[in-house]
Length: 400
Image (cartoon, rainbow, N blue to C red; front, side, top):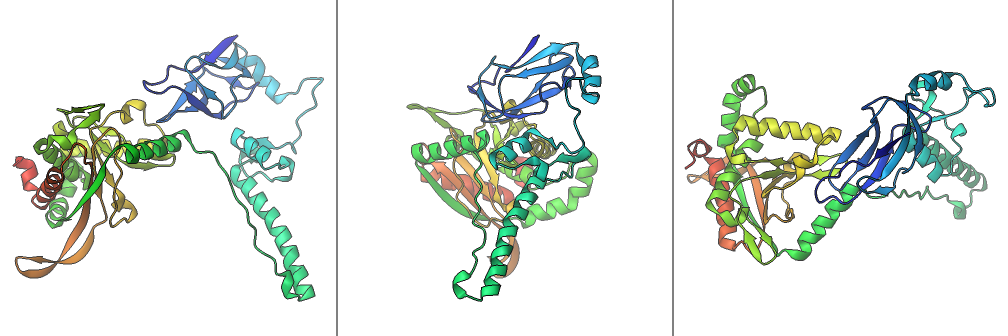
C-alpha cells in the first residue's frame, strides 16, 4: 500500500481544497498520472500518482480542506494488469454493468446528488454515453418547462385571469472558489486599511499607434511575438516609478519599504477569476520580452497552469479594463502595493492640438494610490510622466 499525500504547499499557503478527483476507487493508475486537483488561494495544483497501481481508497473527498502531508488516497502497487481485465469482465458474484447504467464524472455525480436527480433519467451525450454537466442542466430545464406548460394549458382552458402562471423562479447556489474568496478578501483588506485616492488623466496614443503600424510586421517576424500596447505602458510606468520611488514602495507595519527593483503585475482575467502574474525586473526587459511574457501568462491563465512563483510579489500593478470596453474606472490597490494604473478603451475623440480641432485616439488613465505614503503631487506627476512618455514614445528608447 502506498499513501498519496498533499505535497508541500507554497509559502504563505496554509491549506488547500480538494477540487476534482480524476480517478475513482478501483481505477488503474500510472506513475505521474494526475489523480486529483488541489485548489489553493492562488493556484490549482496537480497531484500525480507516485507509482503504477490501482486507486484503492479515497481519504479526502471533493470539497475537503487539507494541509501539507495529509493523506489523500491509498494506492495498491503493481495491480494495473490485474485491474484492466477486471474493468471489462465483471466478477462472478457481481452483476455485470448494463449498457443502461449511466457513466458519471465526479462533478456530475456531485451535481445530481445536490439536485436529487435519478441519473438513469438523464440521457448522456458524452463519449460512451457519459453524462455531461450540460446533459444534467438540459434535463433540469425540461423538468421546469413541463409544469409551466401544464399551467399555461390549464389557464387557457379556464380563461380565468386569476390563473396566470408565473415563470420559473429557480436559483443556483455555488460555493466561491478559493481564488475568488481570496480576491474578495484582499479587495476588502485594501479598502479597509489603505487611504485610497484616484487621479485621472488622458493620453493621445496617435504616435504609439503609428509606431506600431510602421514596425509591427517587422517586429513580429524578428521576435516571433506581436507588438501590442502593454509593452509601451509597462516601459512608461517603469520610467515614472524611477522618478517617484514612493509609488513603487509599500508599507510594512510602521515602516515604508522602498523597492529598488521593478516587478510589475499585469492583471489578467481567467476562468477562475482575476490573477496578477508578475513581470520581474521589468526595467531590464525589452519590448519583445515583455510582450512574449504577457502572452505566455495569458495562455497559462486560460488553461490554469500559472504557478505560485508566477503570482507572488510585485511592486506595482497595471490593469487593462479597456479590453472589456471599459471607458473609465477606479482600480483598487493590490496589497501590499501602494499604487495601480488603470488602462481603458481607446476612443477617437475631437481634441485641440496647436489651436486646431483634430480627431485623435484617446484613452483615459487612472492611478489609484495609497495616500498614506504617496502625496497628491507625486501621484499626479507620476501619471503625467506616463502620459508624456506615451505621447512621445521616442523618449522611452532614449530614457529621457
